[in-house]
Length: 250
Image (cartoon, rainbow, N blue to C red; front, side, top):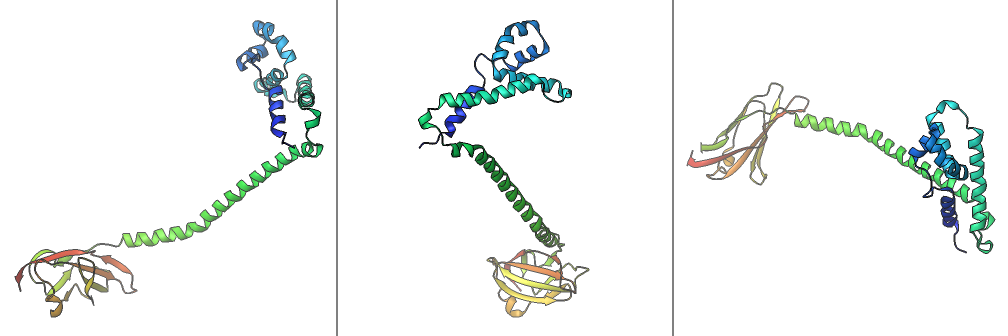
């Protein structure tokens, strides 16, 4: 047996909905306000049209909310709507194709449960999103704080070697950092491969002879010095400082 629920809904909507002869909201407002021309034109139609009576009742409630409970006329209109919907369904649907009473009896209940289920689903999704946002917030804030600490690490300068140099450097010298107790010095090639690394407690360090020999003309190298305090926290960095030997001078 085919599903008759859409047919029922279409019939109810057609029977209880507006027609081309129904008044507009502006015309109903004029009728409700007692305008003579509106009364003459719409009195008979409103008396026979359940839709316009319902709209007129809603308009009365909107314009005069202090009136409180519905009037007896509105109650009669609502009762007429309920009766008329049942009569329309009985006349429109053939008896042999009528919906089983079990299906029709539980139609409204099923729609109500579907609405409740949808509402519960939305609540669950909302709660899950809220829970995830609140539980992840401390972690994200901690990550942001740690990143800010790295990004805000003070910069200091490398005095030599830096840029184009005419003599092969024998030492690396940098700007001292007041909070630093030790410096990590690295020498890197252009592909970021580490050539040499050492630690110093002052503002300079000598380059071993073997490392000096690897500094040849036209070869670009990088120096990086990182400052740490006594607990081992980074308190400054020079970043990668480029230099290149332009001659074969000693």
